[in-house]
Structure formats: C-alpha cells, structure tokens
Image 1 (cartoon, one colour):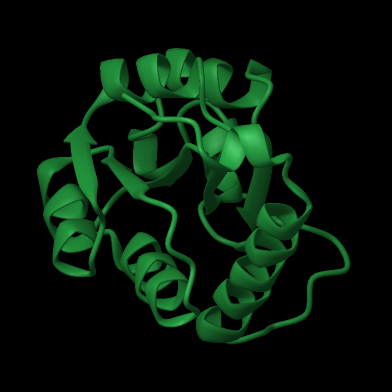
Image 2 (tube, one colour):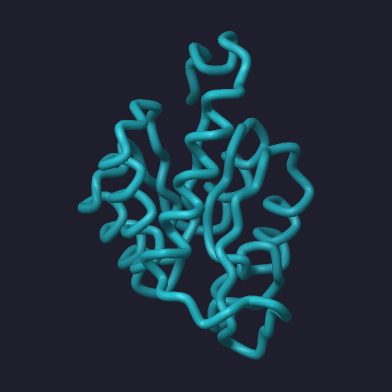
Length: 147
C-alpha cells in the first residue's frame, strides 16, 4: 500500500499527520513529499519512512499511490502561497488514489460548512479515515511493495 503525505510551507500539517499515523498503530510505510525542503525535513523528523521534495516527486509518486493525504490546497493550482504548481495539482487531482483532504479556510479558499475546528482534530479525523480505508483494502494492495 503506497501512502503519501503531501504538504508545503513549514510542513506543520504534514508532520502532525505523520505523527498521528505512527501513533495510531498503522504500520504501512508513509512517504512524505514536501513542496520545499523545510516541509520535507519536518515530515521526516515526524517519522516518515521516506521523503522527497518538489514537483517531480509529487507527479511521479501520484502515478501509483493508493492513498494521498494533505491539505485541500494540494488539488488547487497556485495554492499554499504558490507552492502547488499546476502540474502538482493536476497530478494529485487526476490520479486514481483515494484522497483524504484536510480542509483549511486560508489563502483565499473558503470551504462552506466547515466549522472552525482545531487542526489536531481535523488530522485525527483524517487518520481515522485512513485506518478505515486500510482495513477495507484488498490484501494484495496491503502487501504490495512500493518504490
């Protein structure tokens, strides 16, 4: 099972996602992809199994990802203060992976119906959904090697 966490800026959300994944008992490897080196470094420190930085790693890893987790901005070109390129947004939004997107009402995006909830609660909900998806995944996906 190929699980990817994508984040940018300082990697705060991505780090929190990875920490909660590891604390939840999920044993699947987690690949962190930062839009910049600071975000990547932060997610590695949080416990990511592997990591890469930039546009090309997003494009390449989305091709065969099973689950992608990150802020909702990863599907919008020029979001995260311009760190998400159109090619990155296209790669994430058009790939077949199941996407667990964390809503944030920032950077000129407003998501109607989203209450002002602490980030840790939103990430907790995302990790719960990840656990649910992993429990329902066919065994051949769970045992597939990724690289």
